[in-house]
Image 1: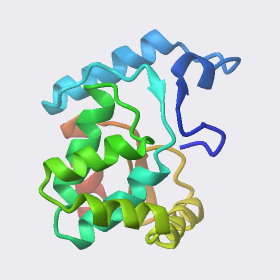
Image 2: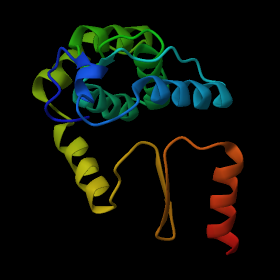
Image 3: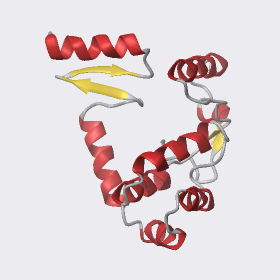
Image 4: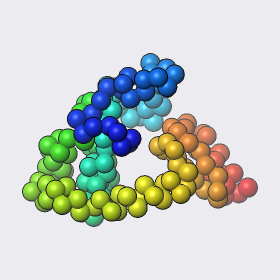
Amino acid sequence: MHPYIPMEGMAIEDLFAGRNIDIPQMRKRLKTAADNAGLPYTGPKLACNSRLAQEMGKWAEAKGRGDAFHLAVFKAFFVDQENIGDLQILVELIERLGLPAEEARDVIQNRTYKEDVERDWVRSREQFVTAVPTFIMNQQRIVGAQPYDGLKRFVENNIFG
């Protein structure tokens, strides 16, 4: 997320103010993509600073619960419209997964995975990743949510030429 998004979040409209972005159209495209992927989606009203969630994700991965945590964060943000930059919300998600809440708090307070996340960001910049998701194979890239057929063609073209 953008470094200027405060931890308490900001309205999506404020984040994109002055950028000539059609927010209702953007939300419609995201809803269609989520529907096509079979994912729940109500659309966030709040842009959140996701840095702490990224760090918690690294910790959850180390605990063998990364996929479950990432799915829980997805649902919290895109369905329940929760601020995933809020420590208490992140700890509640961790507890629901059966991971130790106190350890999670320590990980965040000590910023245990801060450097790991920073390395991921550096690598993303080096690879010219400007949006999520971005798929890269053989120096080729495809950006944004894509229909299955488009991803299949991308993979086939990069494997079989």
